[in-house]
Length: 393
Ligand code: GLA
Image (cartoon, rainbow, N blue to C red; front, side, top):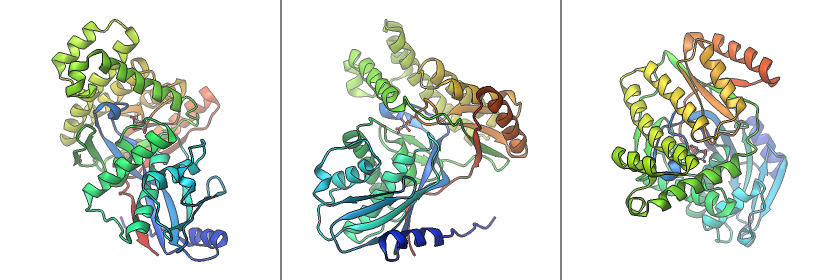
């Protein structure tokens, strides 16, 4: 199938109307879904994210001035940041990502400013719109500072940029997120990533006969920030109770024997359930990679269902809407497996479905979900995406 070329005319026109000149480059940063390996990246676990076609896109040009001007098409808002401004604190708005990146990405050189017009079709929660924005900014900022465009083959530098993006979220925006999203977006494709060593392996995509359907519940992820930070703190608590082991390995990497012992000795029921999720999810990722290699999609679907159950019951990061939409998807009889994807507390789930049944599956889910919640879910077949990159216009 030949790819349709992207139409840039709307972006260029919008850029011109805001900044009064033409952009010279366009930066693309995809969103991602996560096949399996949820909430274990921040304790050194294995994850299997895949980038998708939906993306953040930014048209830009360097201005020779020092200030950075960024217009968000989504918020219809212009942010003007001068190099000194980047020293101020985060204030809970989208511009924080820009200031945080410029600050942590050491944007101190005068005359390296740029104008950037942003658009995105990543409105749904759970597809990593914030890491996508950060990855895009990191590439553009690096281009401005070094006059170099980072190419696809420069994996080690891309990993460095991913760590920088994570630092912005952790240390400036104030979300203790793991490293999965920026690595996925900067590397592209379907990968198995070890979040302790940052070693990753490119995986064969799911067979042509099947697809992954993204199911947006339409429920905003209101508790995502606080609930997420709470889970990270609980994991730190479990590690702190076992300092000798934790000093050697992060929780997700503890071997089966240690894991059994720790579970047996944990008195706190909540912490026990949290630890159980981490240990079992790590095993499920290993099994999923094997299932995918063996083209055993029934097994992969089963592991996805188990992952969702664990996230819902043990880790408690699901919600009614996510539990419901995944259950409807399974009950439709078409899906091999379904689970929430991303941080949870609302947002999106994914389902593994034979392509021939995708329309029937989607119609059944839409109808039953709407009856239950009065919300219309947005369903789309996820097309695999590439990595974040820049193209001259
Ligand atoms: C968010 C975070 C990631 C990861 C997922 C849950 O997307 O940004 O680091 O923890 O939640 O797997």
